[in-house]
Length: 79
Image (cartoon, rainbow, N blue to C red):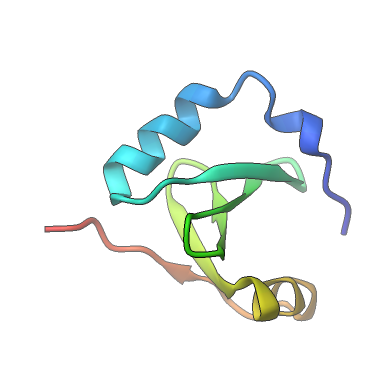
């Protein structure tokens, strides 16, 4: 697995849209593969982000979950 922090350059609108949609402040960390961005919220929880948001878990566990292939939790829209 490789991540590139510079791959999220120019994706500010995507992060703003997802942040508004899910009521969280997502910030880019890099890209995972060719389909997902790796993001973190203000509580230190990591996510896979694309057209939707998938929760990997708290930063202590999230990278291990990603590497081990633990299925990420698909977020529900608030409300």
